[in-house]
Structures are given as C-alpha cells and as structure tokens.
Amino acid sequence: MFKIIIKEKYEDLGVEANLLIRDLLQKKEDAVIGLATGSSPLGLYKAMIDDCQNKLTSYQKVVTFNLDEYIGLPIEHPESYRSFMERNLFCGLDLDPDNIHLPFAKDAEDEEACLTYEELIRRYNIDLQVLGIGTNGHIGFNEPKTSFDSPTHIMELTKRTRLDNQRFFDSLDDVPTHAITMGIATIMKAKKHVLLANGVNKAQAIYDMINGPISDEVPASILQKHPDVVVILDKEAAGKL
Ligand code: F6R
Image (cartoon, rainbow, N blue to C red; front, side):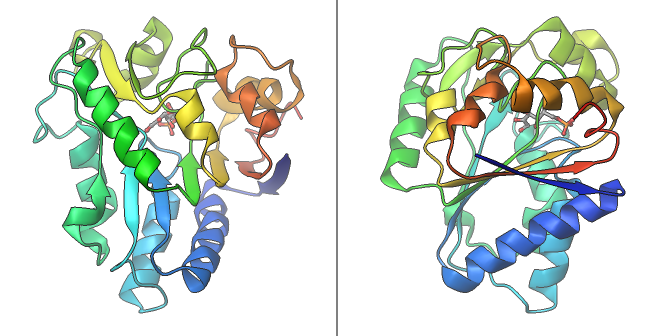
C-alpha cells in the first residue's frame, strides 16, 4: 500500500523522510535500516547527520544494510558504494562500524558473496528500507525482468542504467557492467519502505510503479503488494500521477 507525499522541491524530500527515521529510532534504538546510494537519498542523509550531530538521534545501536554495490571497483574507489556511503552518511553518524553492512562480490561469478549477504540479512529484519527508483523502474539494481522471487544476486546492468550513472564516471566504459544487489524478495521482506524520487526523468517510472500493472518489466511495481510504502516525491517526479 502506498502513502504518497508530494513536496515542492528536492530539499523537502529528505526532511520529510528523516521524520520517519526519527520516529523509528524513538521507538527502537537498535533499528535495522536498509540504505540506498545515488542522488535521491542525499538530502535525507544530510538531515540524518544534522539530527545525529544535534543529539536528536543516536545510531550507536543501529544496524545498516546497503542495497547494492558495483562489481569490479575496489572498495577505496571514489565511486564504490562503500566510498559513497562513507562520504555522504557514515562519516557523520555515530554508527558502530561493525554494524555497517554492504554486499561485496569479487567478480560476477561470486555466488558465495550473495548467499552470505542474504543469510546475514535474514538473521536481522530490516525495519525501514530507503529506496530510490531507476528511470527504468529498477529498485536496488534489480533491472527489468528480474524475478520477483530473487534473493541477493548478481545483475548485469542495462545500458540505460549505465548511461544514467555515467555522470559519476569519466566515460561510459568506466561504469561497471555488473553489481551485487539485494533481490526483490529480499527487499519485499523489509517491514517498511521509504522511496524517494525527484525530477521529471522519474515521472514515468513513478507512474508505472503506482498505476501500472504489476509486471517484471517495472520491478518497482511489486511494491503495490507491500503493506507499507511511503513514496516521497517532488512535483516533477509526481508529474504524471
Ligand atoms: C542505489 C540503488 C538504485 C538507485 C536508483 C536511483 O543503491 O539501489 O536503485 O536508487 O538507480 O538512483 P538516483 O537516486 O541516483 O537517481
């Protein structure tokens, strides 16, 4: 079930989403939070850091799981999702480093890494998962046609996703071709989702997620079956609703 919140501008999305995190942490100081990378959650991460530094929240007992990680980039590469998270969130929170989890696969055949990550997530239970959405409707790096039953797995990225992410690299050739990602089944097990989207280039994917048929052509459409999804949009991303 979707609760849709439309805000005037990008900065408001993070503030709104942060209220949900604050609320969760007030009820459960050892909450398990799923995290995303990319541009959509940056405002949220800034708001989380502000709250933590102003002692409104504490992450000392919080456990985090990231959705995905590129394959083929060393962890210390500035565009690895580990580096992204360090730079944009972890550096400003009082998290215990042992409670931070990101998947990591050494190559596109590393099934062991998928099993290990899936197993670890199962031992916890994600209370709140932060999501963005791809222009092709992907969640995590679950590209169109991914099985709704998929656990953590390795995905070959579509040309469209690689083009969308090219802005972070010098050229398309530098954008990794594969990633390890929580599967759709993994994502659906989270108790609550907060999906953030901004900009006109997300409007069609948002429309299809909410109003389209549930189809593996639009992986995010499976969220229609989840009981608790808060969708926070700016006016442009909500433009087709
Ligand atoms: C990132 C992720 C992706 C992004 C999506 C949107 O961890 O899982 O699904 O959320 O590609 O990316 P941005 O926010 O950069 O538009």
